Length: 152
Image 1 (cartoon, rainbow, N blue to C red):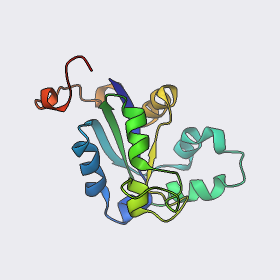
Image 2: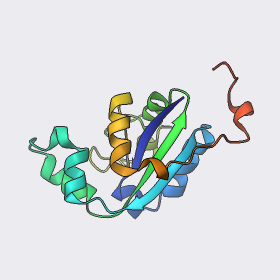
Image 3: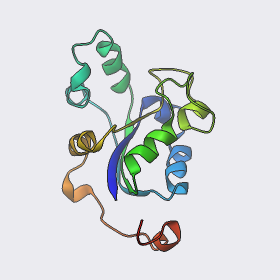
């Protein structure tokens, strides 16, 4: 089992796509263990996107991510980091395959609806920015035995 962070960005919230996007993660048998809506501050944006702060595109990225609320999700599942990234599709909605979240709902590189951690280390760091340990709900869904075999 792995855990990852997914952010439904301001464009997903503004376009009222939250329910549709959450339903895709649930339909894939992934387990949402924490969720909260919040307004990203410039300080949080700088922490989250620390590797991009000095890049020329950062000001527009910060302006976008702080422009409206986001929905942060902590999601558990087998190989969840790669599974979620595959579900999202290519960063640019223009290049994302049909059937992926970005391919179905986005036509932009920046307004691409979702963020997901790109590896285990990034997931740990990013999750700690958005959730405290006591905000994560540890539970085993009753349907787990029909989602995957015990030895997976």
